[in-house]
Image 1 (cartoon, rainbow, N blue to C red):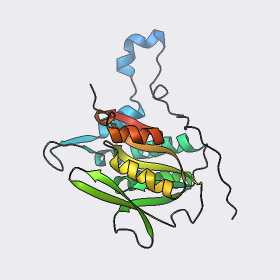
Image 2 (image 1 turned 120 degrees about the vertical axis):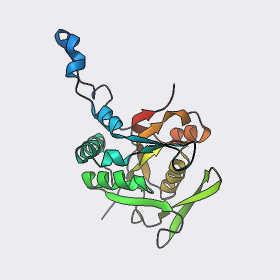
Image 3 (image 1 turned 90 degrees about the horizontal axis):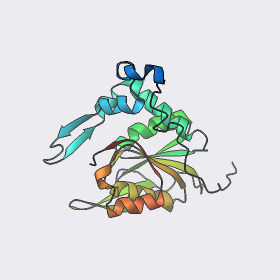
Image 4 (image 1 turned 45 degrees about the vertical axis):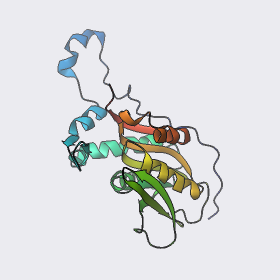
Amino acid sequence: MKHTQHKSIPKPINAFDMDDLIIEESNHHREIKMSRHKPTLREEIQQSLTQIPDFPKKGILFQDITTFIHNGKLFKEYIDMLAHRYHAYKVEYIIGVESRGFIFGSALAYALEAGFVPIRKKSKLPGKVHTESYIKEYGKDYLEIKEDAFSGLKGVNVILVDDLIATAGTALAALKLIKKLEAKCIELCCLINLVDFEDTKIRKELEKQVHLFSLIDIGGK
């Protein structure tokens, strides 16, 4: 099958802008707004998340997404929203970062009828792979993608998906792997953005290279 190179891609237009997700109230009913307020998708998902202190180690406040994905209706609505966001683009592959990126990435790939490609930790993928290192708190770790992930095609359109972005070390390594295969990353899509890390060097470097879309911001003043 002949594959043509894609032209440069603009940033996705968020069909579900935050303003669009807020229920509108007429002036006549403004005084009873609170009693009739219908939670937005963003609000419902944020309320469904659980924060676990001192996990996986002391001093870390863990953002637990399992209490969100246990809710089938909310999970479906989130994936439907993302599919609507990207439907105007010819997305050929969804890239999920190990491991929670697999949850959202595979569901989104199904919704868009796209292929799903996992990026995994070192030595977990068979065959020939590309490897990229990233810095952890104590030393380096590595991510890998299969060399034949896109069947040898160049210039394919992909979405990079993970559950949460903080320091962005894994996301930047994943983006480098995608570029090694000469694919075009339309957007980095995360459910949660920990805004306290937005001014770090790696985050700034990442956001110079790819547009970030997150539904929920946590932290900050």
